[in-house]
Length: 137
Image 1: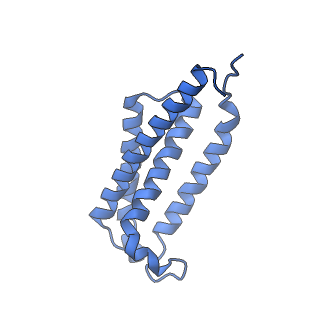
Image 2: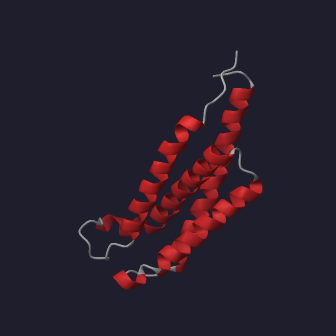
Image 3: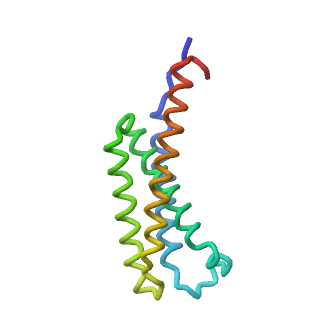
């Protein structure tokens, strides 16, 4: 007998994880460049950090939306990507007042990371759905 996955138990915890992640992302991207909280080693992998941070952000946002509304369509995944990408652009622009660079290539890494994150999200979602539909638990 196949047990149905109960997504309602995950909805609130995932919302809290998303909120906490956004707060940490905003704090991290708005620290002054000479802050002692920013490791100097990050300068060498800056674009990888942007890519990874926004991939995780996109996965968390899509997961939160899907847990609240059901399986997301390609159109909804596109809107998720667009929201994350616009957020990334605004994040870059609001770094100027704290003395950080507003970098087009950072934003490009954000947008690319969001797209790859959503591709991974969709792939994993399909794998999990196939596992549940085949009766494997």
